[in-house]
Structure formats: C-alpha cells, structure tokens
Amino acid sequence: MEVISERLRMKPLSGNDWSLFLQLHTNPSVISLCFDELPKSEIESKFKSRLAPWFVDSKHWLCLVVVESTTNKAVGITGFCVNDSVAEVGFMFLPEYHGLGYGTESLQALINYSMSEFGIDKYSAVVTEGNIGSEKVLTKVGFVLERIVPQAYEIGGHLYADHVYKYA
Image (cartoon, rainbow, N blue to C red; front, side, top):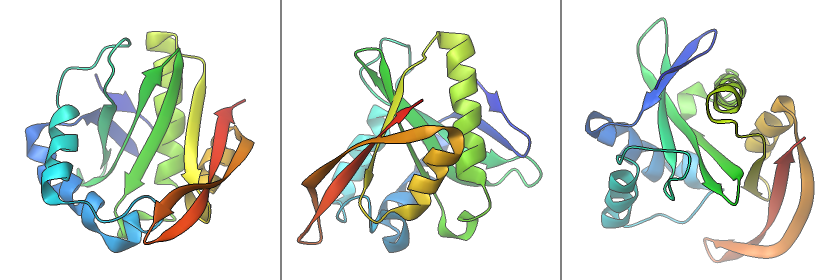
C-alpha cells in the first residue's frame, strides 16, 4: 500500500521507522496536547502493534509514515483505526514540519485513498481542547465539530475537553 499526494507519499510503518515513532512520541511540543509522557516500554508496545499487516476489519491502527517526496525524509505519521464502520483518524508530525500543510495534505490523501480502496465513508477524530493546529487540519479537510466532552482527558494533571469531529 502506498498513498501519494502532491508533495508526499505515505507507506506502512516498518521496523526501520522506530526512531521516527519514538521521536514523535517523546517530543514535548508534539505530545503536549495529546498525552502525558509515556514509558518507553509503552511506546514500544504501540509501535509493535502497528507493524502487523492491516486489513479493513483489523482492530489495530493503520499507521503510515509520511515522507517528503523531494527529500525522501520521514516527517510524521498518519492513519486510522476502524470501529463500527467509522475510521478514527490521527496524525503526528515532527515540529519542524508543522505549518507546512503536510497534515492537511496527507489526511486528505488518506481519506481519498481509503474511500476508493476500502469503501470507508465515515471518519471521526478526537482532539484535545487547545490543539488548534490539529483542529485546523481537520476543518480544512472537511471535518466538523460534532460535540465537546468536558473534562474528558487528563494531561499533566489538568483536565481537558475532548473535541469530537466527524467527516461531513
């Protein structure tokens, strides 16, 4: 499986992508509005679970590495997990690639691909209150805020609302 967009290509996560995965899951500016710092063993477990072959009925996340086409540099990850015919999307990018439109471009390409290849037509996303960058990505692609769940998630000892989006 390979998903191609104007400036990016996305390929399934492989064992060679551990360094990128670890960077994304430990960089304070990436995780600050996603989750608390995780023990390395938990990050390893997440990584290994995403290495298994993915099928539409898989219970684990489809995780694709986002690569710049011109430089062949891995810049982030994107993907989804399907539950009850709804694909919950997620994405993480290295800080030096924030603001370049890669989140929007890769998510749109992923949705287009998964609609045509897998027939998935329902998508959702859960974003922590204050994660404005991720919310902008979602709205640019066509997601709309469906509901706000107050005090749903704790990060750093503070409770945050979850902003639940659906693809319209």
